[in-house]
Image (spheres, one colour):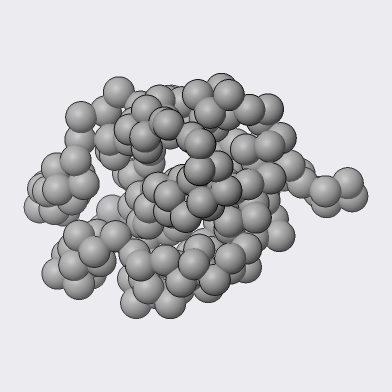
Length: 195
């Protein structure tokens, strides 16, 4: 049975879109940039602000009720109901450690029937917090498990491929992938049949 490693933000949910619409645009009514113009992640250069301002805005949004109660990607959830039992699943996120409990709860609330493992690579760890891994690639190398990574970040896809994982990169404005979520899920179903 194959093990699928799922990125959480912007794969299982639409965090960046939610942040952009309900966080950034709500606070910056003069912003004339559309979500599809966020062609790099992090998008601070596109937004014309310092990285710290973007990170502060995203971190603030992650702590909101809206973020904690985001709807999961409906297409992915439907796929889990019909095909999820054919795989083992792991959620892997990279975000500030103080927001990890909320996203872990979110993952288990929506996908806990299938996803039994949750990993976090803390970004911007506070002083005194041990840093075991600096990237998802380092985490996956340590873990030594996983057959397929579903991810939106090109850097994480490259790292996973260097470890021998198959990758399915979901299309987002900040990457060059053409894979729709429908295509990603169809390919996963095919992989289950091949294994």
